Length: 362
Length: 76
Image (cartoon, rainbow over the protein chains, first blue to last red):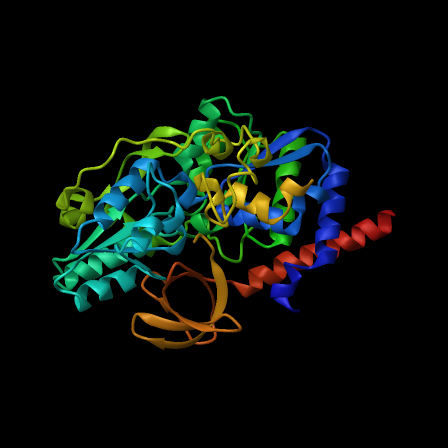
């Protein structure tokens, strides 16, 4: 059996889509909250395989997109210090801040390096003792362990020139906040890789208190269709539970080593989300024992007043209440080459995925 | 940046493993996985191995679709 091919197989997709069409009777809005799912849905044309009863919407699952403009503005300010080198994952450099972006600062001479792993930033600090290295920690539970390992390694190596400026976020408070805000969601397609780290219990309150079916899904088209079938079966039978479709990677208890690392290096805090505002307990800040690595405290800078781009509706798109094509900037002044809003920057953003796979041509 | 990529472990050296993605072999941290061996299928995310992939579970999942296809064929 060719396992990777089986999860991309057209026959399996057809079988699952047939089954969903046969079983789905009740109209349902299913929200996915992972950039990887956003991309896979558009790339594979999954919505076109679904019956009219099921509507897929993208939520605040792209870490680059949900990074607040205040975060970008402070990163820009840090990048302007002559002895600072910014180390970042690639997508972030193009996200527009209030008046600049890291990409613009790089063009003006700031030292901004794109890295593959947080450990690259630690190596950079060791190799450049006369510079201050600021690693921009963004992402959900998938990237938080990597930042935690890097901070621990920097401490172990006694590096005094390594810092992180973090906007790490956790997903369940945002999932609850959307429902509290009245966004119409009947079920969640839950992020597979976040759940590899956290396990399935983090969604228990969404099922128990908010009565929304939750299915943890893999990223191949067959995974997503099977997850939609599992959600359909919960809805049609009136059952509400957290289920795992992505069983080859996700254990109910998650990755305990990763969880222990996160708990050692970080503690929860309130955090800003682009479009959603402040969500209580949704962020992660360095724990007291690691606070000296926090660039926000250790490296004072003056940050400009936050300003969002006029006409941009990224905030509503991240909440799933508007679609990319509803934005008058979409594919007009806002394109992947010249993004106005954050959702057009990362390939995982709803607008970039919609643009790339032709939503503006219909 | 949020993409997890499946690959196969081809070498291990302390905290770092080489993971073969088919066209390239990349280095990934092994800090959060237990009992890693050469030949394991793993999921790599932003520079680290997040978890080993359970190929028996993958096989079981795919077998469900063969069964579903058979049921659909009989019904039609």
